[in-house]
Image (tube, rainbow, N blue to C red; front, side, top):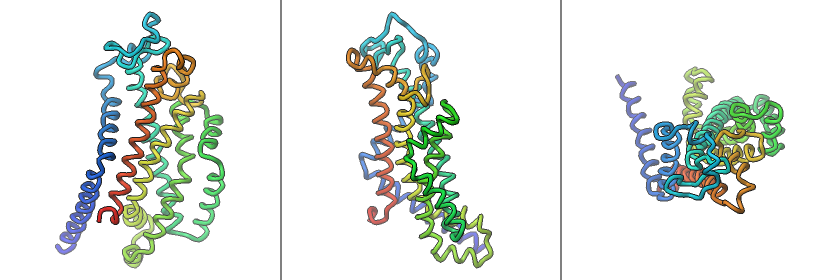
Length: 295
């Protein structure tokens, strides 16, 4: 009976902390506006098939309507093949979100586990893992991604694997630094003295108490991954045409930027706005999670 009451009390405290974080986050108007924009982008990406046909609007060519300026029929104009730019940007947001959220989620998961293990066990395990990470981090992230793409090939799956691998070292080091301060807390020592398995301590005690900085870092990393994926597609090592990916759309439209600048402006704005919104939401979360900012 006493155990149940104690468990319920802990849950109420956790809910109260998250409520405080949400109230603090709502006070950041710029972060709230950015979150609304991101929700609209996600909603548009998920529901695009309901109000436009992918094959006709995003892939279907119409030479008679090529390079038209924005109008009531084509909100963002058309590209060099007569394809509707608005439809291509909406469908292209799926790939950017897949790269940004998917790669960040995978690298965050792997980095959190590796970083928590290194910080918790220490000793030789920590030394070996950190030396491997030091070797990987000596290579610039974009260069490492390019090398991996060159080996495993281009495409959605290959690019996801390459970006994830290049992002894991950063998350691992960040998680390790956060967990090092957590493992010295009294509740970890209490769990050890009770005979709790190391796996359970790491998964249910260490990582949940380090989740705040990890989430903030992950949110900001999404913006960088979106930019990296667009850059790789721009140079022909990511998603290949005619698939509507923002970077490949920029690459195809570069030769027309002087005569019909809208074919470059709208995909560029989509990349910048999405990346900026993720950064602003990450900043807002960082301020909301920091107790000094809440006070």
